[in-house]
Amino acid sequence: MQSTIQAAPVSRTSLWVGRILHWIVLLFLIFDGVTKVLKASPSVKGTMELGYSEALVPVIGMILLVCVLFYAIPQTQVLGAILITGYLGGAVASQVRVGKPLFSNELFPIYFAGLAWLALFLQDGRLRELVPFRSQRATS
Image (cartoon, rainbow, N blue to C red; front, side, top):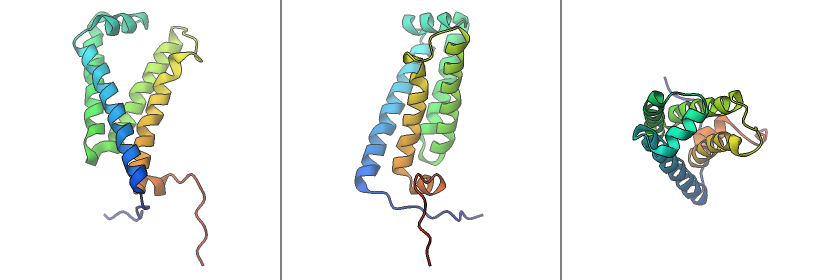
């Protein structure tokens, strides 16, 4: 089955900004996942403050690293972005559940998920066609 979506042209600047944002997201999330897997003190403390047991910290880190792996592979980047969005949505839900103030830095996961999608949007013309932010002009 072939896709009927034509890729919109992507400028060189847009492509490079998207790549840089993509790498920022990857590096940050890899760092976060590895610190959880290795049970670094700040990761354990932060996760336990959200009501999770210490034994779950490496499991949560491994889940994040699997999501990041999908995001890192070009053929599965969109699936990875979906998985990362779900993971980060769970982070926000956990913070809301324990009563952390919503408008301090607890929205950081939402911003980061947006950054992950922005990186893909800037790099992939097909995604721009799928989610247009401006109306298409009618062709005669």
